[in-house]
Length: 150
Image 1 (cartoon, helix red, strand yellow):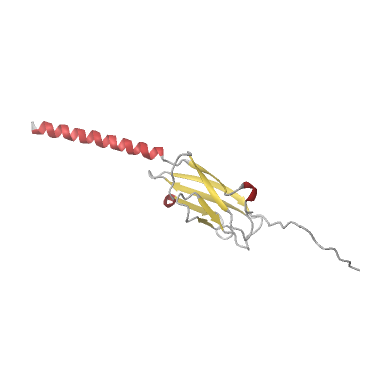
Image 2 (cartoon, rainbow, N blue to C red; image 1 turned 120 degrees about the vertical axis):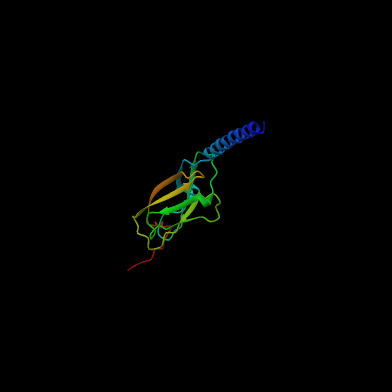
């Protein structure tokens, strides 16, 4: 009788373990980041130019839209660590934003690729990449003075 009861308990434990594993797998898949879309952050009418001396912000919109991300699972990299070094924004708990600190010596016309990588709880990774060109700052003429030259 005790042996039969012990076998029944063991069978229930096995079934419960399988059920818990399935629930955890489902929860993990529900919050799995599959990819992302990268863009320059901010108001489109007031974006900081990607030019020497500037520090434009970038952001990733993860896909699917309802996932939750953690900064500790995120990595930002730049293909040009000299002219376009990237730093993840420490104040962002999601890891979805970063800043590129372009030095004043950054080469105009040069390009760099930013890559955002997210490691999901199950070990799979998602990435977003975008390539940007460093441009020269343009200063608009807003007025002037007229003087007789001869």
